[in-house]
Structures are given as structure tokens and as C-alpha cells.
Image (cartoon, rainbow, N blue to C red; front, side, top):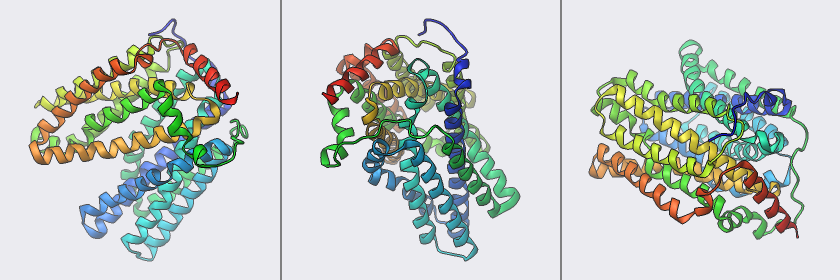
Length: 420
């Protein structure tokens, strides 16, 4: 997959990249801590599992409703400034939650504040995706993707664990720590070089708002990369079914469930750190499809396993395969998209990822209710493998991607074509 191996030391001398990673990590830990804290508080208040589902919906719905505006904003305004403002919105949301808790407010009030929080997340994540290519030179972008994705996985591991410990130690004081994480994330983002992206100057109309969709649809390379992720996660989601596997299939209880939940992220983190050492990735298209085949097979093995260690191994491979897929897809989508269009394309990419996660759990749950949990996950793994093989045939431009330079060339030619 590589021409050579390099420690990518130049990234660690890139001040803006380090600030970006610090801001995203702080924001990610804060989001995870807040989700754990609110879920614990609301369930203790009502004891109704439906309220936990509403917490997730309140955070996801703004992304679905506002992603077009988030993408347009990321192309029209300073992406660094959007990251700062969104963290201010997070701070305001946490402060409002503290006020509601002190006053014994209702669950409806908490959900309303979480909509504000979800809105800030939608704009922050779109701007953060789009800004990274502005901060590093193209040759170092694959390494930057690997390190950034690894930091995100680390936040997903650290945030819930720290949030749970803080709830046990200081109770509602966890909200103050969460507020501090968002404040630090915003302050760090403010130190990134001002306005590193080219601002969109064209008149805002329906065509410009829908520009991300139109670009993705017309660019088969980007369409293939985004759509295969959407379908792979839709059919291959297993996280929502883990409580059932822990309880009824593997009989490992809540302790085993915690280990199972952490294992995919651990596999992703280890794989991401390995990918970060690759200086010049090669054969990126074939590697993407090979990773998705591994991802699919790991789902099949997990669904059929009744041995705990084998299930953990399958989950670790599941996470590693997902990380390789994320690594290649992010490189393809970000580098093959002109900078003036990158915010809107990132918004389409972001909502497809989030929607597929939510719909994937829903798909698995509905199928499990009809045919059983193990068959539902098994069918999902087989379907993911089928989609991978079908996309191999339907999107030859994606499977033929080799070097990073090819994507840079496509991005430049597309940008010149769009400006002429």
C-alpha cells in the first residue's frame, strides 16, 4: 500500500494542525461526556427508555434538518470562526442544562436545549471536516486523516469513561467539566490561522445551496465513496444489538458489554495509528474494497460466534476495517473536491454517515424483531459483502484509485472547470 514509511514528523511541526486536533479532541470528549451525563440524569428522573431514544433524536434531528445550511456556511464563511462559534453554542447549551437541573426543570426543557447542542454539532462537524485540507499540504493529508481519525476514536473511548467516573465522583459537577472542555475547544480553534479557506463569493440561490448534492451526483468517484459508506453502515451496523449479544448469546453481563462496546474503537485506534505512519499510500481503491470485505466477514463471524474471545477478535477487526475504509474515503472525498465546494460536500458526507448509523441500528432492530437477532446481524454482514462486490463493478473510477497525486489532479481539473 505504500512506497515508503515515514514518521510524518512534519505534521507535529504544523501548529495549525495540532490546534485542529486539540480542538476536535476536546469537542469530541465534551460531546461524549454530555451524552452520558444527560442520559444518566434523564433516566434517573423518569425511568423511561423512550426518553433515552429522544435524547439521541434531539441531537441528530438538527443535523438532518440543517446540513445543507451547514455546508453552505462552511464554504461561505471562515471555517475556523464557525468552529469557535459552535463551541460557544455548546457552552451556552451546557450552562442552560445546569440551570434546568438546578431548577428541577422538565425533560422537555432538556430536550429543547439538546436541539441547540445538536445544531452546534451539525455546523461544527461540517466545518471541521472541510477545514483540514486547508491546514496541511496535500502530501501529508493522508497522515493528517489518520491522526485526526485516531484522535476522534480516542475521544469516543475516553469521553464516556471519564463521564461515567465523574458522575460517580462529583454528580452534576460533570456538567462543569463538560462546559470547560467545550470552552477549551473553542479557545484552541480561535488560535488556528485566520480564514484558511477560499470563501464562496457566488450568489446564494437554490443551485448553490444544493451544490453539494449536485457535485456528488455528477462526480462518480465521490458518489461511490459516499454511497458505499452509507450502505455498508446501514447493513453492517452491530452496535445497537450488542446488549442482546452480551446478555442472551455470550452471557457475559454488563461488564462484558462494556468491553464489547470499547473493542471496535480500540481496533480502529490501533489501525489508525499504523496508517498514520504511511507516507505515500498506494492502491487506495483496491484497499478500500478489501477493507470492506474484511469488515463484512467480521460481521458474519461476530453474528455466529458463541465464544467471547472470538467475538472480541471479530469486533476488533470490524473496527480496524472500518478505520481503513474511513481513511481512504475521507482522502478521496476531501481531496477530489474543490475547496470552494468542500463544505457542502462535507455536509452531504456527514449527514450520510450519521443517518446510516441511526438507520443501521433501526434496520437491525426491526429485522431482529422479525427473524431474530443473530439472523438479522448475519444477513446484514452478507448484504454488506454483496454491496461491496456490486460497487466494485459499478464504480470503476473508485476501485482504480492508486496514488494521492491522482486525486489532487482531479480536484484541480474540476476546480478549473467549475471556474471557467
